[in-house]
Amino acid sequence: MTEEMSDGARVVDVTIRGSTYRVACGASEEQRLGELASRLSRLVEAISGGGRSRTSDTLLLLLAGLKLEDKVEELTQQLSKATEELSEYKAMHSREVRLRGSLEGLLRYSLSRTRELLTYVNGTHVEEEAHDTESAAVEGTAGTC
Image 1 (cartoon, rainbow, N blue to C red):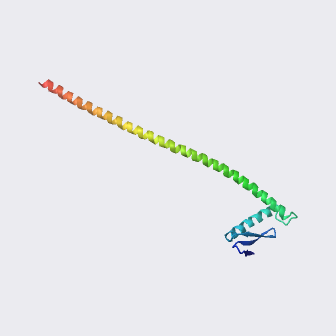
Image 2: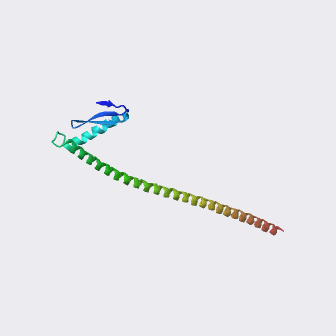
Image 3: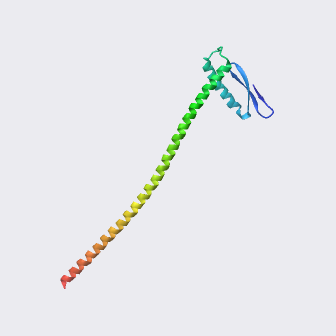
């Protein structure tokens, strides 16, 4: 049963092991509350062994709460570990980006120097060929005089 309150909140009946509890929630939270109550009810049933035992609902709800708290702690530890790993990966990525930038800079410098050397070598070679051609022409002319 659902009942609306004057402030817009709703009171929802939640049943766990045959006992009904009235819980207030926001209008938009009613469906989520129902889902959570169903999951809690299944957990309490699993803890009790599935049948109606002599164990009180209070004790079963306490045990369910402890089990859920244990799971929360486990997940918190896993999240913490994953967060640390993510930080390490981000740091490695940052180092790799810096290293890549350095390598690209070195590569650009090497290419520039290689071009300069090629220009120098080609220019010297062209000058030597021109000088050799002039020398041969002069020698050829000198022999014909």
